[in-house]
Image 1 (cartoon, each protein chain N blue to C red):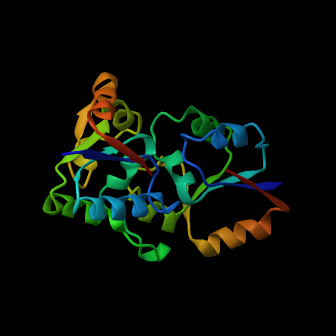
Image 2 (cartoon, rainbow over the protein chains, first blue to last red):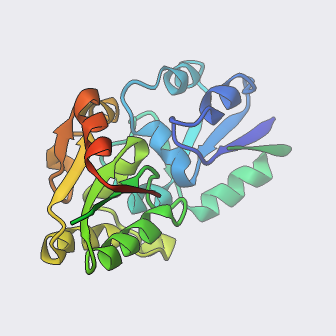
Length: 98
Length: 117
């Protein structure tokens, strides 16, 4: 099981590249500019991951800083730094994208 | 008199481009007529309600409201870029002029120098 972290906006190819590598049982955390991926309403890549029931998280501090708190896809879950650490310990390895 | 166009094309907080660009605009406005063009993710710099306390980062977006006092009146953005991000001018802390592709190209031609951030 892999924890994927993504720190680039949808303008960057990282989201699409990362999505191709995500398997069932993995999870995705959007951090830094990666949180913009959960703020556009037309991200089919992200919606496909959610349809596959891949858990997608956003780091709350990054969401608040960018003024996106009320603009996120409701299927995306907010986590704090402590939650990030917990998820890291639950997965066997992690892969950083971006 | 010559005119300088500052182009902001990065979102805020993920890098220093936005803050550095804004500092350059404020400094430049003391010497020369300046305009600002927000392209792509750069428009996110103007999104309202940025709360940076938890990130220990400065919410420099509020300083865009001071541009008027510095004599910087020409703010532009791409209407298509705004739409692609599901945003309207009501979501922004200041109100740029929305331009189509032809008008954007004309802005680049109109200015004597372009500084990219």
